[in-house]
Image (cartoon, rainbow, N blue to C red; front, side, top):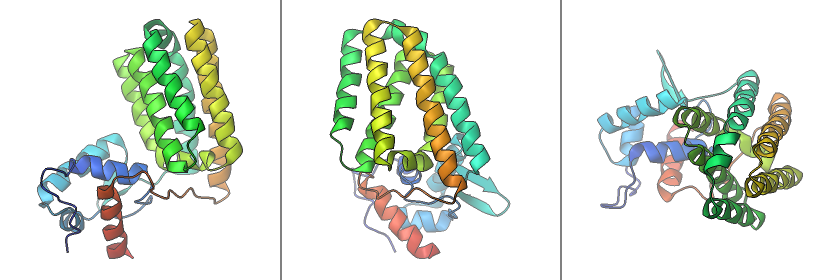
Length: 240
């Protein structure tokens, strides 16, 4: 049964729908991703589904083994490792970010932070946070650093929302974002490097503590695309 999400001229690429559903945690870690079920839900053939799964496997969002494909499930140790890597890679980009950031760039980043200040929904805040960090990566113009940083950011996104779900966690993150803006305005690479390192280290400690204790983040899906929500509803019905 199709979900009616394959609207002519309106359907985004399959890989984007799947990536969005996984990143928003609409498709939970460990969920089997059966090509036939995905193709039926998306109203397409299995070939583009297979290609999308292969692409997401290279990004680490999907795990493929002899039992088939499933949404990647990270252990607490792996989460700790990824956050540790982020705490290394983002600060290493600070000098290049400061060198390349012009007044218009800083204004756009500041606008994102102000928009996060007013974001009441967790999903809205998390999406803006993702956009803020991706913007920093682009500004660095360090292609290989940015590729690694973007992959780490995407891998931890489905579970990192648990830190943002705590009100004080968001407050601390916003204070650190404002420190980053101040460092960019001052052209202070050392200050930006320090803020980025503290930002990752603090979030890492809190997140590992929560998932080690059995707490799991849950996304409401409020900002997910209609296609991703529809796909998730169909797949969870099939697997339920």
